[in-house]
Length: 268
Length: 268
Image 1 (tube, chains in turn purple, blue):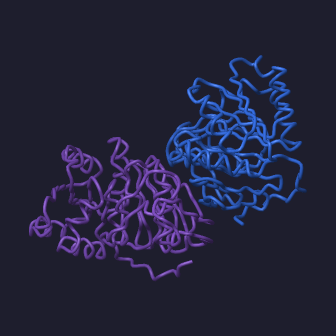
Image 2 (cartoon, rainbow over the protein chains, first blue to last red):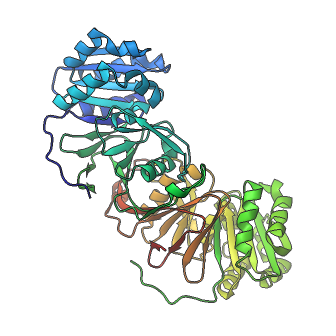
Image 3 (tube, chains in turn orange, cyan):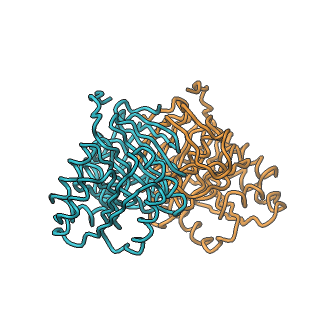
């Protein structure tokens, strides 16, 4: 079991959210996130990818949820991650919300740029960072970039890439078909048994506080897979595509209101 | 942890198999099943439902796998479960293989008939009984009859019905979309925390021996979910459709060659 570290009381919330759908459920969930932020909240949305039919929607959702000021930027090139106006807005925001059609799209536009540094610095100073849907994966140090569907973990069934690195305690399933996430999470934990696996339903979020306690909000569920007592994994010996044997994981199905301590790895 | 019961050395194998596809992988898996039966094996296939385009296939698969004599019966009415010739064939078979398009189709044709009694009696005497795909669920006392897709368990997300009752130690996901089974199994265990949950890939089987040790054969994986240390389940308090909170389950992803003791609930 990992040691309990001194809590970093200044760190802002890390919000790993499923897809923002259906809108009314997503608005309820976001309202609960905003309830934990300062009043008069300013939100910055950073988006990537061609799923851009929702630009009006996310701004409306955030205003309904409590944001007073919402600014949205669609990143198309890495140079877009160096815009002075965007970095200034982040300096004064209480929440940055990340959106993308797939994790690598956003991580390759942001990784190593002034924007990535600003997000890490501002989160350490107290600003909340939310990743929604596929962007939830970016919050992690080791980002689940791609994964196959299916309940059985397979060698080569997931690909990792560097994420924003706001936390290295969890690996987050990148959304998409929530129902297909078990095999992906198991494959990821076979490769990264240090981390805890989180799979998150749509209109549902895991809010990680500065004390590393996770709280579930929203209409759906969060799957927590804990490999800290993992007894066996044969991933090192396998040919690509073959199923991975991995035993003795702990599983929790959490719902709205549930709390889980990421340091001590137990439901509260 | 359940007490170790005196092993019933005479009981025949109980084979819970995923769908028999692709055929070459299924034939390999069935060959491994037949390797554990007496030579000169006679097999009886009992099928129900309209998925009847495979009748030639299953007989060929079984012959390739080692059966010397294969007889197939399609049940259309409950009266078909009282055919003298069928009951005689079962009296002299080493293996009965069950097939259906959905668990309730076969269980409602067989339940309470002389055929069901013959299958239980002959399994107790040493005959192997295999349920393939949706028919795997029938092997259990408490059969997972219907289940919703998704990773998150929900109240009302599964329906139980009586099965053949060859074992009450496990609940078996009824096949279909293997990747969607996590929520179904969790819902089932929330209702039946006595049992162990098994989810089985296509072309893969869990063979339960008379010593209640399960062995995995085949190309895919078997998910084992053990609720014996379950700490919390709120299923009794929920409205239909809402997600179930259920914590502290043990999960194992097993692959070909893995063995698991159903009495002591541990991987061997």
